[in-house]
Image 1: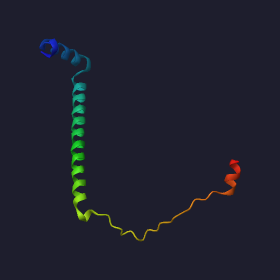
Image 2: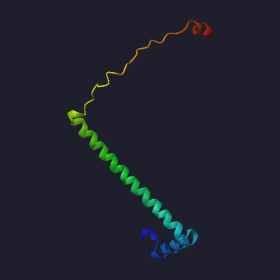
Image 3: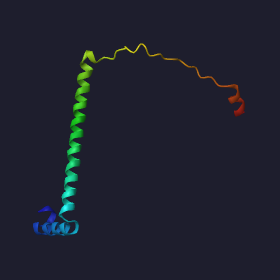
Image 4: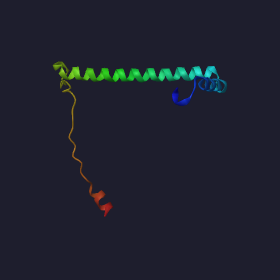
Length: 90
């Protein structure tokens, strides 16, 4: 069994762990570990769902970008060096 470890040795190790940490702390660790696994699974499921939604939106002609923000002004600015900056560097 399990690389030469018998059931009695596993029970002794389990008993020592319970004596050291106590059942309350072990229960909390188990709950935290279960919550972490549950959160990980949920995140993986949400990620897969998000990829499917993106694929569906790419195929949907209604999901195209519209240019309705014509009221927004954009300005082109040309950066110029000042004569003072070039003199200071020399």
